[in-house]
Amino acid sequence: MSQLREFTEEIGETVLESVGRAVSKAQERTPLPVDLLESDDAYLAVFDAPDATTSDVQVQLSGRTVEVRLDRFREPREGFEMRFPGRGLTLDGHVTLPPDAAIDGEGATATLQENGTLQVRIPKRDDGTTVAVTDESEHDEPEAPASEIETGSENGGDSESEDGSDSDGDGDAETEA
Image (cartoon, rainbow, N blue to C red; front, side):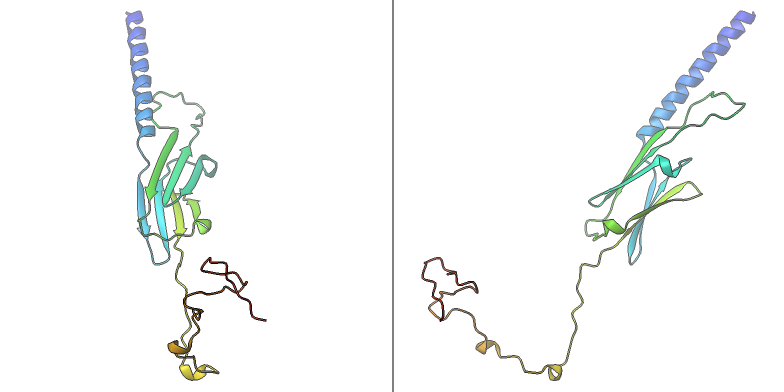
């Protein structure tokens, strides 16, 4: 009877180990859960990063896509034996920012939080240029009306560039002495 009991226990352990490995592989194939948030000056991607350390985490910004990979190590616990290896060791996730996102990839940061999340902050890039507005009275000389601005088309459309080359390609570049 004890042989039957030992055999049954071995089968149970084998089944648990197999199921655990299957669960682990399924977890590795499932993308990491992620939230994408936006403020006036940045995007924030918050990934679940359970039991990860900074050395386990790789973050890459490819265009508008934030890619995360966790390569975790399962540390042995003193006095315990592995019965059900159900946690995946290699986990991946990604999130794509909106199509109109203008971002500063150089300013991106990634922080592993104590609560088991990874926060990736991507600052927005300000593509606009501020143009100073002044009153006309602040200029030393009034601007010439559009009709008095030289267009460089004095000789029937032939124009000459600053370096003396002919812009119409007919080889008749004239230089002033």
